[in-house]
Image (cartoon, rainbow, N blue to C red; front, side, top):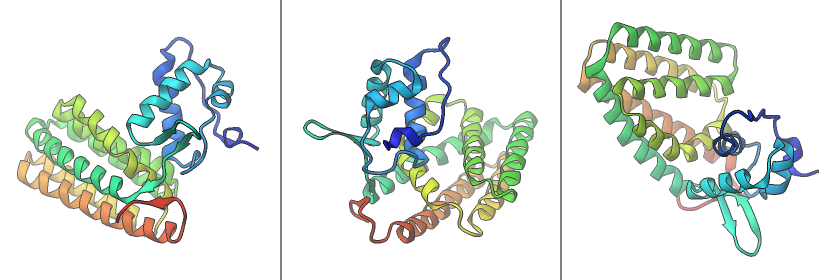
Length: 237
């Protein structure tokens, strides 16, 4: 049975541009591990599964190749990229620099409305963790960070973060759940909210930096345990 046969069912809306929809669907399959490292990408099979032509699938694969999520090989076809420690570290450095900058700008722009929304997202995240719904928890975690970028009013910055953190996201789905880590993230988000509510730019930057550093160290350690000896890990540590 082909890998595509086991992929989650996704709905394509004909009223919206297909190119971006197909890109986000295939990208999500890769990030969540439904299309794992080294798996061949069959554009025809994906097109049939989604009920679209091959053109938007081909365009999506090209865009994913630009993000180092797939490898297009002239003689052997296209495969999902292997997990590469060097790319993971590079992605972390980019994400940390951009998010620390974003939260500093957000601190200066904070309002009660912003604080209320962050509290709401924090509650949704905590509930997902308490219910051990870790895929939902990752989505709520991203919503929290994405909203801080919205507060900073730097929309292109968050898009750059999303692209750079794709390598990190693949690891997040591979390494959850690990006892205590999700709960630690909840507490760190609380500290970020407090710093932002005080409009303390320096403290907000410090809290975000410490949060991202801790998260990176822990999931890299988890990834090493999960992938130890596996053929899917390449690159330098």
